[in-house]
Amino acid sequence: MLPFLTETNRAAFTGVRFKARPEDFIVEEIPQYAPGGAGTHAYFWIEKRGMNTHDLARRLAKALGKRDRDAGIAGLKDAQAVTRQWISFEHVAPERLATLDLGPNARVLEVSRHGNKLKMGHLKGNRFVIRLRTDGSRELLAAAARETLGLLQAKGVPNYFGAQRFGRDANNAALGRMLVQGNEAGFMQAAAQAGTPPPRARDGKFRNLMVNAFQSELFNQVLSRRMPDLGKLQAGDLAVLHRNGAAFKVEDEAAAAKEQPRADSFEISPSGPLYGPKTPLAEGAPGTVEREVLAASGVELEDFGRPEAERQPGARRPLRIPLLEAPETSVDEEGVVLKFALPSGAYATVVLRELLGDADA
Image 1 (cartoon, rainbow, N blue to C red):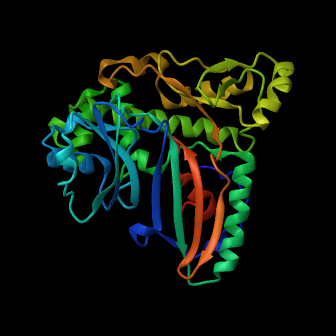
Image 2 (cartoon, one colour):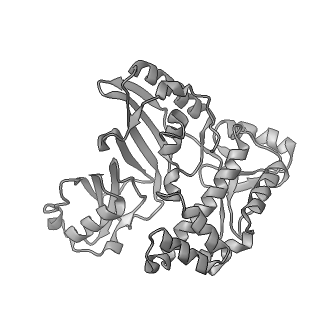
Image 3 (spheres, rainbow, N blue to C red):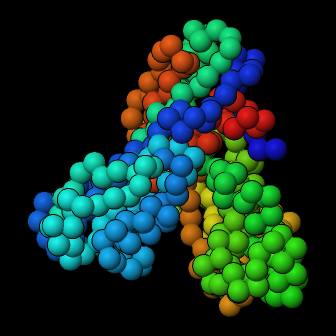
C-alpha cells in the first residue's frame, strides 16, 4: 500500500464510477512540436476508441500499404478510452488519404506533413478529460475533487508508476527480478505459469518490460519513503530539472536552502533512481533510503547490466511532476468532469488514486 499525498475526504467518492463508457476517459496527446506542413512524412491526427495504439498503427499501415514498423508514434495510449494522437508514415501518396477506412472505432481528424518521422518520446504530455459518475451528490463530489486537484497543483503529483506498469496480475516485477538475478530457468518457468508462450518470454522487448516493472517497483518504494514532502530538497539529493531531465547534486543544507525556491516554482524536483549500473545514487539521508531499498531487493546495481536483464543502464526520475495546466472541475447531467494535463511518462491513474483511493483507481 503506497501512501497518499493528499488528505482527501474519500467518503465523497464512495460509489463513484469512472470508465463506465469509453467517452468517460478522453486522452489527447500534447505534441512536443506541431508538424510543419511540408516534408516527406504524412502526419495523421487520429481519434480512436476501444483500441490500443499498436493496433491502430497496424490498421493504418494496412490501409496505406505500409509495414507496421514504418509507423511513427510519440506515445502509447489507453485502449479503454477515447484518445487522439499523431501517427506518421513516410511517402504516402496524396490520393491514398481520401480513401482511408479505419473501421468504426477510428477516424482521421487531420492530416499534415513534416520533415522527419515521429519518434517515441516526441511528446510534451497528455491532456485528460475524465467523467466521474455517481448516484450521490454531484456538487459534493465536485467540491472534493476540486480541493484535491488544487492540492496536487500546489504540491505536485507523486510520480508513482501506475498499476498498469505491473501487468494484469501484478506479477511483472517478480518476473523482472528473476531476470536481474540471472535466474533464466526460474523466469521461463514463472512466465509459462503466467500464460506467456516461450517465444514471447525469450523476446527482448518483453524481457525489457519485465525488468522495467521491477525498476518501477523499487522506484515506487523510494518515493513512498519520501512522502509527503516530495518538493523539499535535502542535502545529498540529486535534483532534476523538469525542462530537460538533467540532474545535479545538492551538496549540503546550505545548497538545499539556496535551491529550494527553484523547487517551489517547479523548475526542479528531488529525484529517485531507476536502478542500473550507471545510475548515480544520492548521498546523505536520501542516499540512505535509496541504498536500503536496493539492499532489501536482493540485487545490486551491476545485476541490472546482465544480458538476461537486457543490460539496463538505469536513470533518475523526478519524485513529483507538475500539472501542465490549471485543473478544471465541472458538473454536468451525467456526472463530474475533471480536466487536467500531465507530462509524458506520468499516469492519470495516480491522480485518480489520490481522489478515489486504492480500491477504485
